[in-house]
Image (cartoon, rainbow, N blue to C red; front, side, top):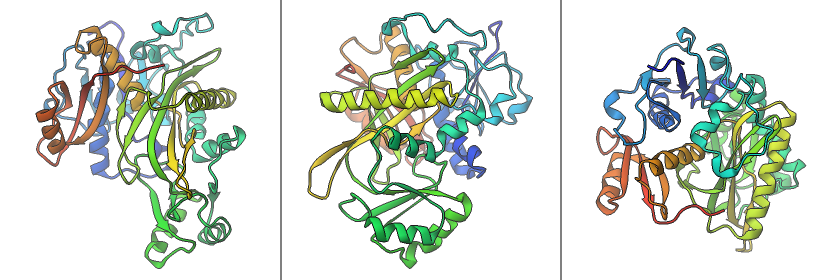
Length: 393
């Protein structure tokens, strides 16, 4: 083991911790499997903590990627020298002095080509948990969108069913072509803790779910459910006197809006869309810096079709003031390029799915690298596909 004991913390359930809502055991096991992808940031001898213990045999051997020692159980009993966490939260801050306490000289000019995701995050001072909690609350994203002039029509924070009914009567579900809408808990991710419905009334079919969401959360975010045609993301790292924004990537989501993967390319963005996305990311970084947040963050964006059938671009959906799988995908690409697994003319697609899907993809795509091996057709799997085009920008 290296002299400095380094620990990666795969606390992918940070939103549940912020919201004071325990995760279901099945969700905990799934996010623990996904958290093993954080070894993209690991070196030999590092350790990786996940909420549920992951069997060693589920983590596939990949040339160029370290195999950190897998840990679980109480975080409070661990005493590493340096920590890199998925998110800065109260459960993480008591571990040790956060990574980056030696205050690297980030005010100097740095060539973008030298800013490797796999190493950069170890050098950034970690955010205080209160700043991370505030930055991840959906009210911050809504306030930021309004301040930057990109607020989604009809979006609002609501505190009761009666307030929701008044809002529906006034907005007529905003810009949704189908009249559909969604309520989201202030801290949630990957399609959890939300209610979808349709129309200007709260139907009896969903009233119970809506009431439970308000009772558990206090306030929720209302948004029109849009007819999305493409999803994008931007990852960045912010610190005092420092900001680096990585090129945009494409997000893969299912019909429920749940995350399924990353494509490291941005060729479908028009110059105007790219410019708006870049300025929005920079605007969010400025607001994060003012509130005292330091570390990685990501924003989501999308194209959607309006009521008249025209495509529109929305540059700010969610703000994730934490690590994201976009950054994980970039670190994976760096590692695989280093060992020659990704040629100079290729790029990477990071996928999350089931064993059956991995098997189908294996048959049609020889350039496929499993990261998390499934136990069967219905169990979770994570893999990388080598694409023929590198990211642009």
